[in-house]
Length: 342
Picture 1 (tube, helix red, strand yellow):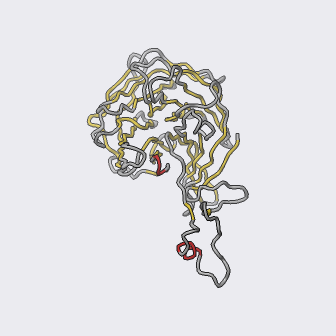
Picture 2 (cartoon, helix red, strand yellow):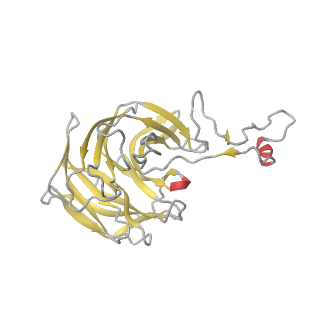
Picture 3 (cartoon, rainbow, N blue to C red):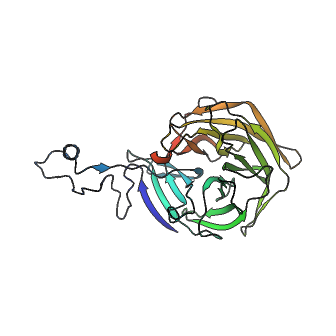
């Protein structure tokens, strides 16, 4: 597995160290750092032929918490992030996954783009969500089937070791779902009395309501993935944001609370809008061994006006809760939410 490291502010490859700023082209002249020269900022501002370019990370379409790293009293939360890169000529060679660490200084988040091999087709098309398997160093990565016309949308099983080396160990087609599979951006896995359940919701753009759907899941040591044939479903209707996509991200805590983000996306330049809700709960019982119960009305935890939330990630199955954003031409970001509706 090959890693390419970037920092959020400079987004420059790291060879022997991190550099914050890079000359943009055209006009690659470096600022003059002689003792009698003006400060670098003044030198750049005074010349139209030389400027420093600060770029944002690529979009974050799904996130899952991996671990907490502690060193010299510095604590960082570490997430696996997927990018909704397409399988076309323009994007085929771009990374599909990154490891992202929370900041330790003003340089911002640290992004390690990963170069991993995927089984089956050459590269995934439009990975929109990551569902970590509770208590294991493994997660499901789901293609969205954004156009609804992919004949074989795929779910991949990723595993990682103590050094966070990520490997894709298997792939299976999406199971038969209770409604036509179109634009799934929200998936999660929950464990109830030792049994795993796969949960998903379509983004349902243009509709007020989506459905949260759940079935049994078995993931074996050799990488085999099996889904149940029976589903249980509950509706979810977020009151905010207006005209938004009801489900753009999802995670489930250790007590079975399902958290869903809803997002408004009018185009690559926004303006975006989002909200995060406690939308439903998973409880023991029911015809598949676990049942869904809607939270009525949905409990709004936070609003993110100006941002398009597409990933929701809990730390070790509980708060704090982080969001990953796909703000299109503005790039991506990772932020901890201030939850006001607990």
